[in-house]
Amino acid sequence: MNLFTLLAESAAANSAADAANTTAGGLGSILTLILPLVLMVLIFYFLIIRPEKKRAKETESMLNNLQVADEVITNGGIIGRVISVQKDTVLIETGSDRTKIRVVKSAIAQNKTAHDSDTETAEVKKTKGKTEIK
Image (tube, rainbow, N blue to C red; front, side, top):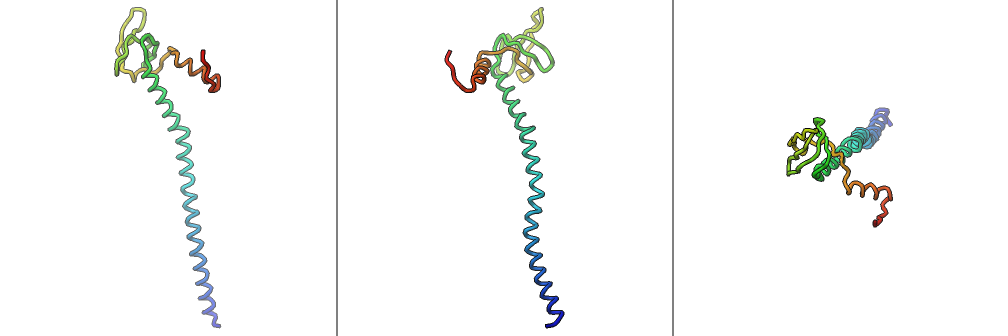
């Protein structure tokens, strides 16, 4: 055999092996690029997005369950007692001179009054899911 023929056959064999390795290596390199991105998305979801959705749901339920005579705190720091609740607004009474202020429901930051449903859910949590009839 000729030296050039041997070199040509070995080069052809090497290029075929390289082609097989690059397709397998290409898939591996794509996974190494995508895996950190997927992990970052999961971390953002569990640390930022999910708790924010839970907090928004709790705030919405608090606003929907406002009742007359609840003590509330607005986003501006005004503390007052609810006099009337309408669809989008709440009339609160502040101070000893009975000043009345109408605020938008979304401006209420906190309800300081504990309702019966809140205490019932707290009791159910304490009993670890066991339902007791009182």
